[in-house]
Image (cartoon, rainbow, N blue to C red; front, side, top):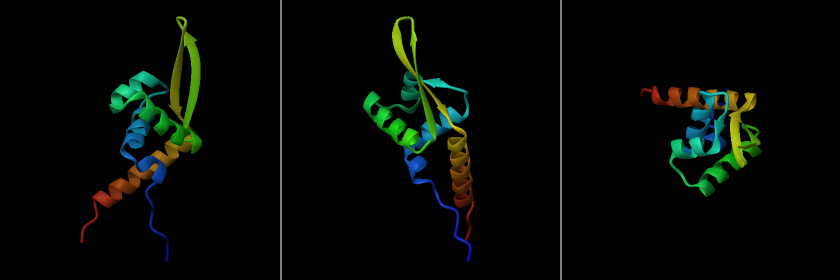
Length: 98
């Protein structure tokens, strides 16, 4: 018997799913833009990003712009693959009929 596709537990949390969706649509996004898009605090955003980074799904880049440290984020090829598979599984589940 073939094992059924599974949801990715790293991506499945609502905040991380939103982060991946936002990052999948751009080359790179600044921390504050993502934070505001997801609607969470800095600390919650940092925790979500840490989990995604630890899984190899998000790349973090720090840069100084106009004298201020900025954090830029992008989805990695592994992150894009995992996100696409997760969305495919959600779609499959949404279309199940009995």
